Amino acid sequence: MKISVLSGKGGTGKTLVATNLAAAVRPSQYVDLDVEEPNGYHFLKPRLRETVSVGVPVPRLEEGKCTGCGLCAQVCQFNALAAIKNKVLIFPELCHHCGACSLACPEKALQEVQREVGTISIGEERDFMQGELQVGEPVAVPLINELKRRVKENGPVFFDCPPGAACAVVHAVEDTDYCLLVTEPTPFGRHDLAIAVRLMEKLGLPFGVLINKGDGKNGDVHQFCREKGSKILAEIPFSLEIAETYSRGELLVQREKDWLHFFQNLFGKIKEEVGHENHRHPQR
Amino acid sequence: MKTIAILSGKGGTGKTTLAASLARLAGEKALADCDVEAPNLHILLQGKLLEKKEYRGAQTALIDEDLCRQCGLCREACRFQAISAGYQVIPFRCEGCGVCSLVCPHGAAHLETVKTGDTYVHETGEGLFSHALLDIGAEGSGKLVTEVRRIIQPYIQTEKLFFIDGSPGIGCVVIASLTGCDAAILVTEPTLSGKSDLLRVLDLAGHFSIPAVVCINRFDVNLKITEEIEAYCWQARVPVLGKIPFDSRVVEGLRNYKTPLEMEGSTAAAAIRGFWENMQKYLQKPPPVSLAFQLENV
Image 1: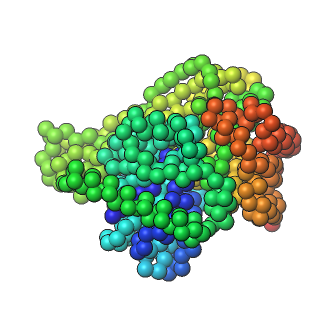
Image 2: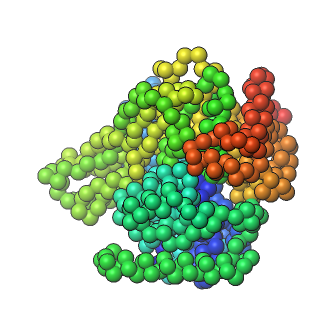
């Protein structure tokens, strides 16, 4: 069962929830898909077994073969190639790795070479995986895809997703069984929850909401969920003690048995929701 | 006009709250919200709409089913698995690269420019404000950021500062917010996550030779890590211009659409004012040399 933990807004508590779920539900896999700014390792403290370089194909010119026709620059939709006076300049950081240029070149003068964009670190037993985008690289998606390719197919998997609502998040949550939207009861939290919910609807993914840093009333968010018919699975109240525990990179479930039960119950509710979903849409 | 990006690496450290506060404090300034996927600054700024426009920032392939012979060449060539078994383009996956149109022997595939978001320019009580909302799941958020920075320019008159409220992360959206800026304010929090994320975004600022300053928010939640951040910044010659205490009035204010400056007795507000004073002095000095440049010349 693949469970994505996302939010839209940054800092609502995705990593808090994802790491504590992974620690409470054993055996399970935790995959940190926030490859721009991974943080799960602070909490799960994995023993890393392997680090793998991840690359993307970018064009390289074989100058002897180039006739300066400029077709490559013409077909490139991303301005990653410029044909100037019979020379071709390549801007690999603009490249979208589609292969159009090498397809179009009549002289087969463009070869594709691998350019490293980041690394993947894998813990023992593959129960922990994270990606780290190289600083200066713009696109997270190739690392996210590589991580998801390596996920074991058995047992629960918790995807700690990046903030936002665009391509990185789409690739992170695609083909998962359930999405847990972590929000906070502020106007910012509610605004971005609405965005995350629209993404869920567009992708056709089942989801539920967890309210973090709750104030007991959570007016805005409760009203929103009521209007949308979205299920609130759990609430974590605001507490400076939780903030301090989090700041030190400590898991809640290791501090108190109550938290262990809380996250185990949360997983139980998620399983129930997935069960209901399968019942409603057996062909999914 | 000096352009200053407000970034963090980590989400939720207080960029937007700080941006809104600086909007209230700074004199002649313009603002932009470049967190185009999940914008929040407009929630705290009121104003008159000057322009709203559709942004058509990406292309998507379209397959004409009358011309399509289902030969499979496009599906084989597409590197993004964006063409279904039924020869429909899957919009979330399509990069708009045009490879399908290159390989199709029947001319059935072509690229079409599509809308990817909406941009806005407002005249607010605090000054000009540009922002945007990316369409759900759309491509090209970096390009939309560049557009948000561009659309305010024709309205600029005497503004001395342009604050850009950025997004978390270090990828294309942040890069598009950061390039060409005169300085970056990095808002961090004293947590292990906040610290490691700060180091990466500081690295990014150095990569683009943008001088950075740091503001530690909720610094008293963990004094030990606050000290570690200060020590790191000291040896990296990054000025820490502000330390804001945890203050429950901040969230209380936010829930009432107010910045900390409007909350009576707010300790965070006092610290934000102190940060702004330091920032003004910092901006008056000649452009500091970034660490990246320093290392090159050692």
